[in-house]
Amino acid sequence: MLIKIIILLFLAVILFCLGSALYYLLSGKGDSRQMVKALTARITLSLILFFLLIIGFATGVIHPHPFQMFVPVTQQQA
Image 1: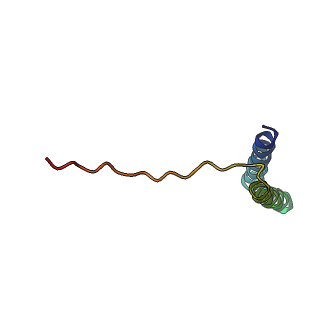
Image 2 (image 1 turned 90 degrees about the vertical axis):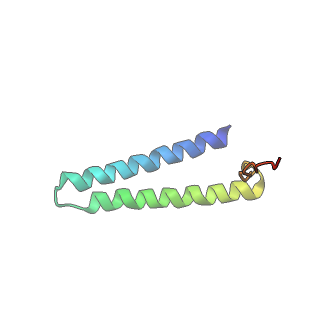
């Protein structure tokens, strides 16, 4: 359960960084350094989350759902 909370926190912070970058873009103050910092933080957090997910899958901490393909029902011949 703790790993799910950590993943959700990472996603929330990533969305916050994306929103702050959008704010700095739309405010138009002429200084894009803050926007670049926010986007850099978003990319860094996304990469950390990606590698944490890969490590979690590899170590067995995270178990993916089994993949079930949809099998269409065939019509029965009378």
